[in-house]
Image (tube, rainbow, N blue to C red; front, side, top):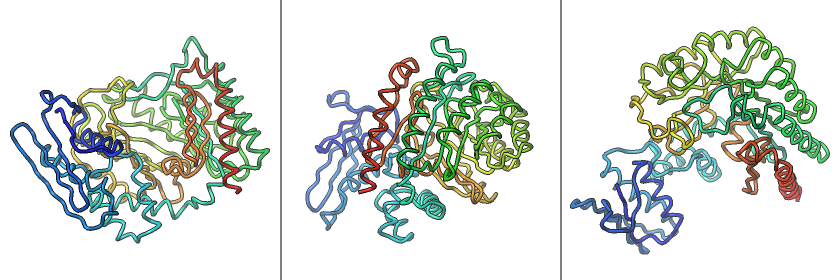
Length: 471
């Protein structure tokens, strides 16, 4: 459908209206040429009321709302009215109401400073039109975070994200920057030289300035796609230059079982890594083939058992809802089998169709609403972080669950943007508390040529942020 929005001069509100329409229909367009417009949305706002008209061909829907407090947020009053019209037009509701951002828990943290839990639930449902179920989940996630993290204390520390942009093969749903390990222009060994220079220089700066590291997260790509020798060099470098006595958590994404072996697991065990992930995504053999995963369900189980035998006692496993040709029974089977393995944490992702993935614009089988939340709660997993993505399946969310005491601190501070996080490696993002972002080049060759200039920028930004903290 083609929309035309009339009466809004505020660019930010206009962007939010367009995002909301896209949440109902990702293929809708916005056009100012009258003959191309299927739906006209007209709005009038004064000091006492908001009046909106939605005209769809010959049909006309009108809504009017009066309000007495001129200080009340007009943006969300307008969005709420537009939402109600879209519900009538598309004959469906969205669980997150008018919210289209990827970090709804930040909103709850904001209100925690002003209201009690009952009042927060009321605001989420009346102002933002979030469903009762999702409002309670958001509040539960934030309350769990506040039990385990002192956010103010963490502002005096940093976390480190290290990116390994190599994989054995590319999963069809993936849009992350990744290269096959036999990439002819830059080998993993050559890449590690540049990456380890970043690690050494950032580590030296932090030690010199007595800035503690809270968490280290090595992700990708697939870090364990590196050879044993390459992985040993990387882990040795991290151990020498970043690991300290105060470190609270050190995660290594092992990802796909076909990237792991007994020798690699034994190698990892020699270092300070405290948390690993083994990510099946599904236990359906046919789906694994469809998404270009080069392993079997048996490989998943065997790799998990091997890790347990080597005393890895903090393992995360990921599952995805909405994979092609999967139905609710397929996902129920996956979650049941992973719960049976009893990992310390399980992360449930709803598939997001991303530009750059092979599956972008593919149609998927509709999966009925399965309450994974309640299933995991019943099995002693608590929700501790939540985020959303653009074009996410069903306009829903990704939730990380864990056994009590095994919540990932890095995942929380990354999603809540509550600490300076320094990204090292190709396409790694550094995010600072002053809202600045420094993104290393996405292209591997460009990264190799220019990483030093980005490294200098990151260190300069650290100085600015920590001078502000000291003041």
